[in-house]
Image (cartoon, rainbow, N blue to C red; front, side):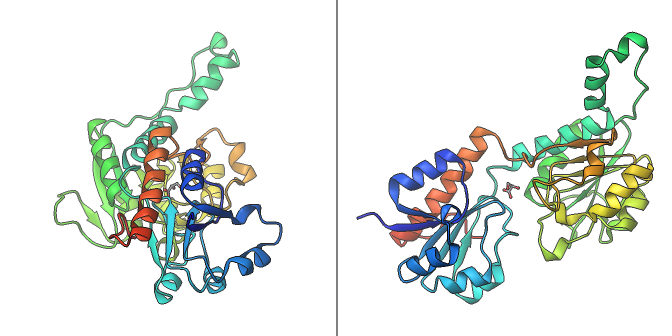
Length: 311
Ligand code: DGY
């Protein structure tokens, strides 16, 4: 008989197909009455698969007293109350490493697109404006410094790529890293004063909420560009929108927003902003690899083996 698995939210279809093939899956997001659905499973569900914003809070964990593992599709676990899970003896696994390169690629793409105004150029050509004269010149990456907020696995991949584009690197984080010699700033405002561009590649959650504050945005200034491939919550979004509108911040490349998929209407009007629909890791090979980790962690749990990527 197949083991039972709670699937909390929509999943990359090949991963869901793999889970459906192995387990008797119970799809919470399709249930008309969520509480009744959870109550009907409470005495037998010990494993759950979550994804993206469809994580799990403490109240849901309390409805599943036998739960032992949450296998999350995504490296960021900010949609899961990890402390509550720990208190209840539930292990959370995530999908690190396999997405580093794709997310770092998107960060550099957004930086280039914002600084060299690639979407604006595209609109310029399509609208026929080029026939009337050349587009205004843009800024450059050359000779500039990129400040990385969060020099973790993805941040390091961004640094590697940025260096090959001729950028100098500085970084901010909770701790100075002993294996790099780039300038370190504990204070994000101090970092912003020293650099031309900032990319946020830190984890989301309470510890980093609003770390890209109004003061950071002001310190980056009218020639500065902010790129966010982390979580919308790391920026003071209202301050960001205001600064972009008023030209107090030069530009932004944003893959993530506070209330996805809703994006502040003011951003849609701005020419100095490049927008993406949270697609940092959204390539087929990477999503397949992430899904494989979800599957492998569950298989390890049910086999009584060590989990592959516990958070
Ligand atoms: C992640 O893995 O956390 C990405 O942001 C996709 O959700």
